[in-house]
Image (tube, rainbow, N blue to C red; front, side, top):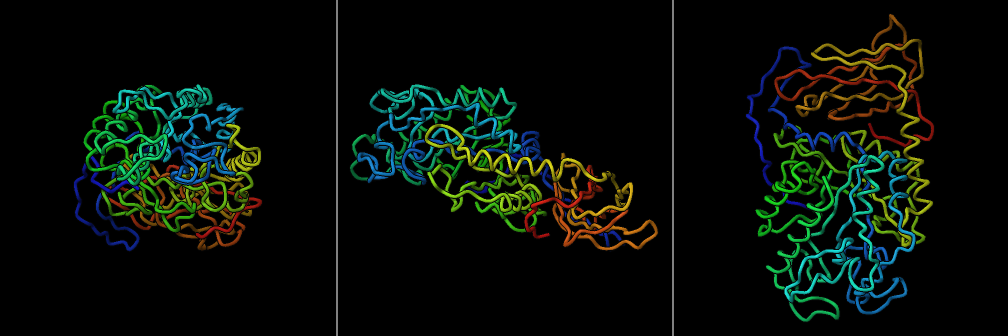
Length: 475
C-alpha cells in the first residue's frame, strides 16, 4: 500500500477549547476535502474490476509465474507469456455496467495492467530495443480490441465514472517484482530491462492511460510507487488527471484516498476520513483522506475469477455494507470478470440482491429531519411505529465536525427520552442499528462532541423500519 506522506494543503491548528456544558468540546481543526475527494466519498459504492491475464491463469499478484509462463498448466487457458491466452470470446462491457448499476456503484476501476504486465490496451510504448511493448491486447495474434476504450464507453453510457488500476509494483513480463528489476536470467518471452528503463516504461504507460481515455474518476496505485518515480508521477498526475481521486496516492495527488487497512470488508469501529496512514483514520488529524474499503465478492479473498469458487452470502454483504458505507467508508467491491469476458450469472444475481436490499431497506424512511447548532435534531413520526435503525449524515464539505453523538427515542408523546444508541464518526453517512426494534413516536440525535470550533450541521437524520434479512451489525 502507498506510503503516508503529507498532503498538499495544511490547516491552521486551533487550540483546544472547552465549553462549560459537559456535552460540548472542540479539538484541532478537521481536514477539508477537495471536490474530487468529496465526490468519491459520496459515491459510497464503486466497482473494482479484476480482469487481466490472471483471469486466464490463476488468482494472484502476479497470476503469472515460472511454472505457467512458458508452459500451459491444466488450470490455465494457455501459456501466460502468450498474449493470445487472454481470449474473452463474449467480452461485453455493457453487461458489466448493468451489474454495476444493479449494485449501486457510481464509478468503476479496471485493472489496465496487473502483476503479469499484460496491458488491456494496445500500448505504443517502446522497449529499449526499439520494439513496441509486446505484451498487450494489440500484440500479434492477441485479442485485437482496446478493452479500456470499450470499458470507458460503456461506463459513460451508463452514467458511471471510470478509472484505471496500474501496478507499479510487479511486471512479470519485464521481470519486475516489488518495484525492482530482478537479477539473473530471464524466462522465454520476458524482456530484460534496467531499473531506469522499467520506470521509464511505466511512466510512459500511465501517461497513455491518463491521456487517452478521458477524465478519470479514480486511479489506483496498488503497492505505491518508488521514491525515484514520485516527482514525475506527481507532475504527470497534476497535468493529465488533476481531478481524479487517487487510491494509495497520498504524496503524489491533491485528492488521495487511503486504504482502510483490511480487505475483509469489516474494518471494525468508526471510519474517519481524516488521517493519512493505512487504517480507519484519526479524528484529530488535519489530513483529509477518505477510506477505501476494498473487498471481494468471492470467498477466500479471491480477486480474479475462479470457476467454482463460492461467493459471499447476501447476509454477509449486508454486514459489509453496514461496516463500510454505514460507517463513513467507501465500499470498493470486486467485480471478477470470467473467462468469457462477462460478469458471471451467479455474481450478477448477488450484486442485484445487494442493490435491491439497500434500496428496499434505506429507500424510504419513516421520518426525516435536519438541523444545525447545538440543539438536538428531532424527527417526529406520524404515529407510533416500530423502528430499529437510523441514518445520520453531516454537512461534510468542510470535513468532520461530529466527533460523537447519541440517539434517543420517545415511546409516547409525553414520555421520557430513552437511549437508542451512540457512536463516533458520522461524515458522509452513519447507519446505526439498534439492539432491538422499538416502538417510537419521535427520535432525536444529540451531538456530544465536535471537531473544530464550528458547530456541526446534520444534513439528514432519517429513521427506518426493520429490514428483512438484515445481518448482524455491531453498533
